[in-house]
Image (cartoon, rainbow, N blue to C red; front, side, top):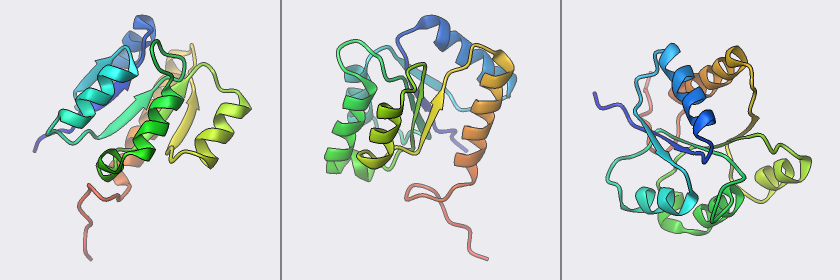
Length: 144
């Protein structure tokens, strides 16, 4: 069975390392594909034959914000049809961003980064476990 990749869009290498360590300690087998900007991530998502498992995206990024990327995904029929779960994982968790994410975008989660490793692991475990169980257009429904 091929394990689908997790796309991480994060420009802070310390945060990237923190998430890698959390995934490793949780024994998450999905490969992590890292981008430090939205433009390169979008190119990959558009061109890749691989169906990503999940996108975890910061908001404050160079060249284009995570909010702007999600707007582009939502406005593109091609990208919407890929039905990739999209989670914001960011330090900038102000109410305006949260409101926009849920009322104007089709975001599937909004989490504030923690500097506590155990909290980060708990968040990542919650997110991964949820998407492993959740049915969506690119999962296989189990018929009982």
